[in-house]
Image (cartoon, rainbow, N blue to C red):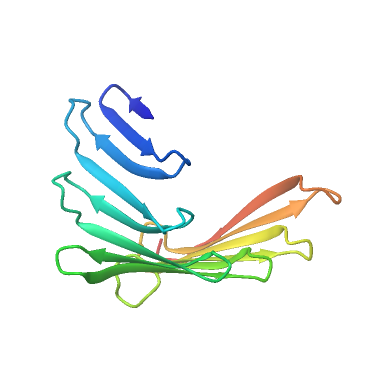
Length: 173
C-alpha cells in the first residue's frame, strides 16, 4: 500500500501474505528516496509482533529497537525501546489487564528516568464496558501537565454511549 499526502510525503507499507505489516517506509519529500524505514518482526507462528526496528535515516542500521513481551493470554505486557548503537534501554511501557483481558493500566516512561511520563487508567462496569479513562501526565510534560478524565455512560442496556471529558491542571499550566 502506498499513501501520499500533500504531494510531498509518501508512506509505503508492505504486508505478508497473512496480513502482517512487515515494513513501513517514508519518503518525506516524495522525491523517490526513502528517509526512514520501520521493520516489524513476528514470532515463529507469525501471531505476535516481537520486535520493531526503527531506521530513522534509512541507512540500513536501525537507531532504535523495540522488544515486546506478552503474557500467557498473548496480551502485551511490556515494550522496551533500546538505542541500537549501544543496546542501552531508553524507554519502556507496561500494561496490566483484568480477568476479561481488558486493559486496566498503560504506563509509559519515554525518557527512561524511572518516572512514568504518562499513565492511562481504565475502569469498567460489571458488563466489562469502559466507564472511565484517566490520563495522568507527569509534570515533566509541561504542555499536557495534569489529569484528564474521560467518562463513558451507556444508554439503557446497550453499547450506545455518551462521553464527557474533565480536565484538571496543576495550576502551573
